[in-house]
Length: 146
Image 1 (cartoon, rainbow, N blue to C red):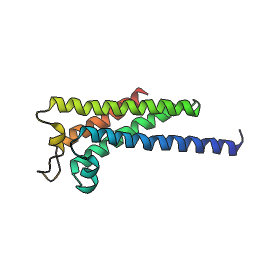
Image 2: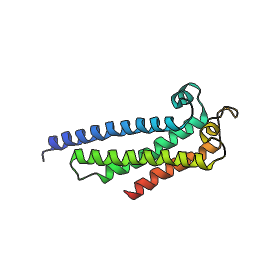
Image 3: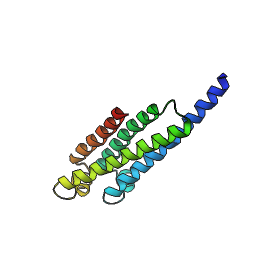
Image 4: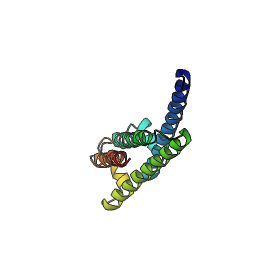
């Protein structure tokens, strides 16, 4: 292959995987918003609720690790297959993270979402760190599986 052809191919790969990664991060945030009370967007950017920020950051970090591993595992395939496989890995990771949040909620006394985003302690709940570690761990588990 000519250097210019390699460059074009690499730019196409980079752009495609980059756009997919952004879409998966947005989808992940939307899924987290579905399982937390109120608007997560408002909690993070307007109210600057620390627990909401911890949850969103941990979920994004864990998802980024899993998606990066998915991209790495997809090298050698045609671009469309790699994109499709990475999309599947990303959606599965988001589903696992959402399920873990619901499961921890089920095992926790009271409503976990309400406890995590409670404003009484300045918007800082120590329970948010538990879910944050679970989100990062899931991202690492998925990455290791790939």
